[in-house]
Amino acid sequence: MSLLNHIFRDKSEIKRELTFDAEKRIKLWEKHVENFPEREQLVKEFSPKNLDNTLNDETKLQDVLNKLENLISSEIVIVNEEEKTDKEILADITKLRENHQIETLNSKFLNEAKKQETLIEIFKETHNTLVVELKIIRFVRKNTNSRKEILQKLFRLIFFNEAHLYKLFVGQFFSADKEKEANRIKEITKAILLEEKLEEAVESVTEEFARELFKKMSQVESDHKFRVLGEYIFDELVKIINEDLKEGEDTADNIRKLEDLIKNNGLLANIIKKKRKKYTKDQIEAVIIAFRKAYSFGHFENLEEDLIT
Image (cartoon, rainbow, N blue to C red):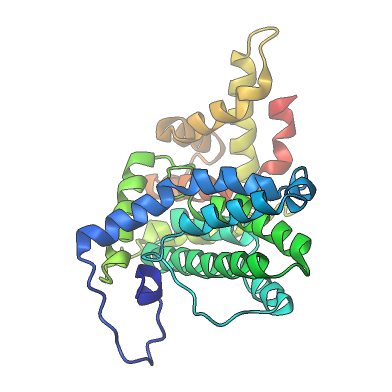
């Protein structure tokens, strides 16, 4: 039995033991994530630009399919021998999450207390996605009907869906303390792969207040006082960036500058104090948590035009 099949097996089944030791389980997963760029490069042969040419070269098509399949180790995931029809495969694809839903999972992991629960969902989605990819590869290898449509789907699954699924594991995320978050990801990943349960952090009063703040701050069209506060903080950060902008300097790097400022606790605290003079230290901390979370979810994108023009 392969690693992900074992972890996400139907619990009603008779338990089948996996003989992989802890070190091998972790190395298998790390190798799988590391080889993703190779699969990402290979699947470009099925991109809208290249697909027709690839379909016209059967030898090349089969070679790419074989290489893609070989890069999904049978020790990571396997599929049963039952062959699927094109309609069944397309139906399976519709059950997978869209890119924005995967991004929501990533943001939820970074901004919620119950991190292990969310990362398990990301692992499950990875497992389900890999299973569908293998079914597509096996179908296209033996069938000529619906090839183009299904290969278009395979391109999107690998090039977009999988790329989003691995963001947390390769450090492609925004966080005020990226090193701490990366270590937490490694810790929880290890627990999941070894089928261990981690104690989740208990939500503090400040975090609970921040969660309620976030709900109001995220309402883009709202004039609620917490949305107004969030927009005020964002505008103040934009002012700082624009004041430091030298004449003729490219504004393309302003988003990175903004994210650097958002990581600065002291700066954010001073901005909040100017607007809310009576806020306590705990209230300010909650606003900072909520603001960062709202930013990471993209709830201030409507204001970014002033930053890049």
